[in-house]
Image 1: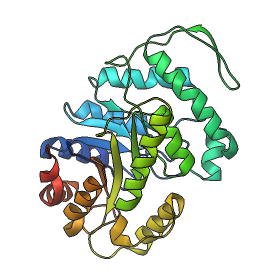
Image 2 (image 1 turned 45 degrees about the horizontal axis):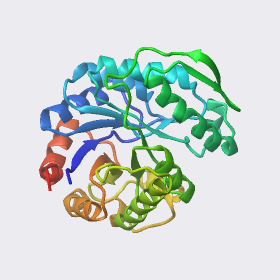
Image 3 (image 1 turned 135 degrees about the vertical axis):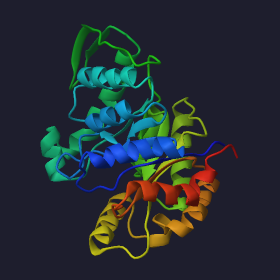
Image 4 (image 1 turned 180 degrees about the vertical axis):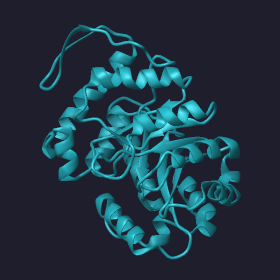
Length: 301
């Protein structure tokens, strides 16, 4: 199993210096990838714009969305947008999709009611794959209608390995039926093991197979005691995932990060997106410390 380690910025207001310092530092230190999240009504920068900026500064690291909201977007327009970014960055884009935040403001922004999201997602994702394959798409569905529509450009590899997030039973089953990989967030090793097994079971039931190295997690970490703001954010995210859990089982201190990642590897996960719970004052120093703490795990096991 090959372990890959990337990083994501803390969910806080970002100026242009943060994605620049993070992207250049990840490339310099030998990390695998840069990932950004989406929150239209929050402090995060637009993920596609941010990744385009980061791609222009780098030549090696992969760039990914963790995760991009699909319901509320036109599959045809999104297919062309992501393919364009992939062509410009030389095939380094890793798209991961989700239903969107469970937040009334986010659902208003995307024009999608909460109860509609899953059905829209299941109609849209196969359409994206068809557009990326270069098909002339004819489709008459409940939400989208196309007649002989072809979208250009195509991605560098004429398609993507599409990853999905989520930890509910429905989300895990959907991942197994539709996705090429699973990227969970803020999970314990035990939850990672159960989720991986559920995704594999759903994939087998659909006559599909997901590669064993296509299971990963967004892993928060901390440096000493959390601020009240960081602890509140951690608690809110955990409530959305599956409920309370010991802090060390989800967000280890930097000194415990290596041992935590090893537990996740034992649970069958191998792709990791590390995220500091509190925004670093100096990204160059932060990346050097994380490199020393965990990057030696990024090798064939």
